[in-house]
Image (cartoon, rainbow, N blue to C red; front, side, top):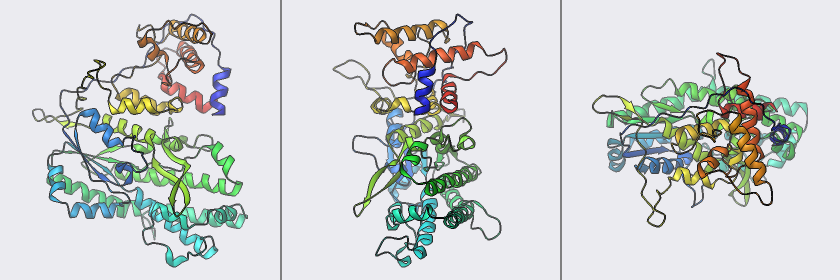
Length: 485
């Protein structure tokens, strides 16, 4: 956040009266078609593992948004072969649910990858005395779960990584070996993604289509969880271990990109790119360098320990509430329903909201309620925020406080003046409720220096673009400023 604060503090609020600038365009409206039934199959991600009782999974958020019935048959820990086995032995309830579905959402593959990586690490650790006392190579499961990493003596492993160049080379070989076996199909490499995971997914898709040829099948990519902030790494890890984590991120970027590319080759599915959204950079994984690792640390609790059993704490790779909100936005934007008359696939209409008898106002969607519950919403990655705004009809596009269809000097000046006014002891708000929403550019619930700075700098940027030059919308502009300052 140091670069973020530096950018805010150094930005000039002075404006010059330049030519009007263009505005970020609104998203298209949905059709009149309804989405009646959503069915979900998958692993702990789609099951909402790690959320507390007051939080909502992306499946629940989507179902509420469309007013749909939801059948979620997800199960924690399932890999793609176990999910295929479920489909090969479907219960009557599951078959009937698929038969009447409008969309079937699939989340799988992450456990296959995680199992192989954890087993590789434990097999590496065992002969080097890096397992905890009482554990041997014989205790390593055939299919280790995320909690199996508790067998690793993490302090000893970190000391090993920080030990010598020989250790560094050994760890690099470990990372390269499991990356190649996951991603490559040539020579003696296993090609786990291509030869195992994708084969299982393709078989699952065919089973679904046999039961219901008209349902839409949506399959999620696997996000890259080891996108740790540089501040976190420098504060918590030594040089050797930090170097290994950087290498791990690079290797896993390649693995998850391979998964995405392979998934896009499967017929009769729509791909929801959670990988790109959690990375939240202009050029996705290509921009995921040392200084800009990506934002998975924001959308998961990987930088916060959780109890993994037996009194041990481990990093939680699962999406937190912010991650589920981001995935729900992707799904809402992706889900389509077939029009029986025209055979077209169209976006279904959001459900009409019931009216609260006490307030007389429409009850907010779970999506909006979830959005409003996020305390650090100001840190929401700008490119992911763009997806939120494009998806949700009643989220206003920020900046245009005077409502003239563009962000110009009048808007930037008004936001700056309102912020200055609110900063005084006797300052009285002058904006309407609608203007407050538009002036709150980073959606943190208040008008402050960040909003004034963003408006000023964005207008200045637009005023200097040349005719015919492609202009960044405000979210891309903010993203560039955060990355480059």
